[in-house]
Image 1: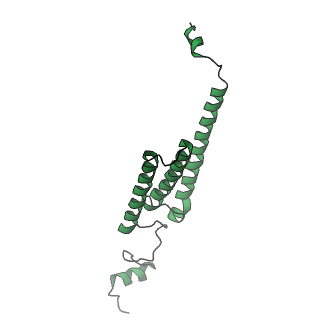
Image 2: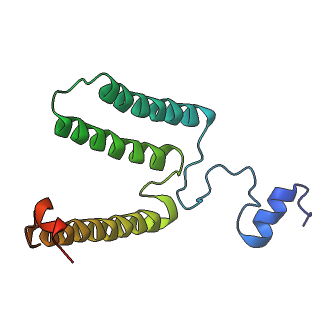
Image 3: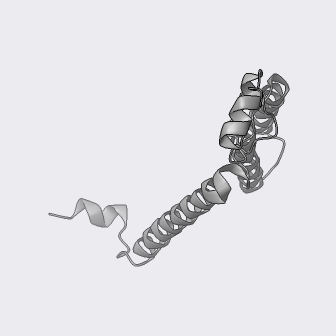
Length: 140
C-alpha cells in the first residue's frame, strides 16, 4: 500500500470527509453569503424606499394624511424586509429556520405590546371625566 500524496485525499481517507476549505458543496446552515451585487441591490432598494416616502410627504401627493400614513407604513414594512434579506441574510434556511422563528416570536410580542398599549390608552381617554378648560381654572 502506498501512502496518499495529496493532503486532501489523506484527510478524506482518514476521517471520511473532506478537509474542506474549498468545498463549495458543504452545508453551512443555509446562511447565504452575499455578494457585492447583493449588497448594491439592497442599498439601492433601501435608498428608493427612503426617497419615495420623503417625496410623498414633501410633495403632498395624497390629499388625505391618513392615506399618506398608510402608504408610509407599507413602505416601511417593505424596507424592513429588504434589510432582513439583503443585509441580515435572514431566510427560511438559515440556522435550520430558528432565526425566522425567533423573528416571528419577536413580531408577535411587539404586536401584542403595541396593540395592548393603544387599547389601554384609548379606553383611558374615553373613560376620563369630561372637563373643559374653564372648569380647570376653578380647580384647587
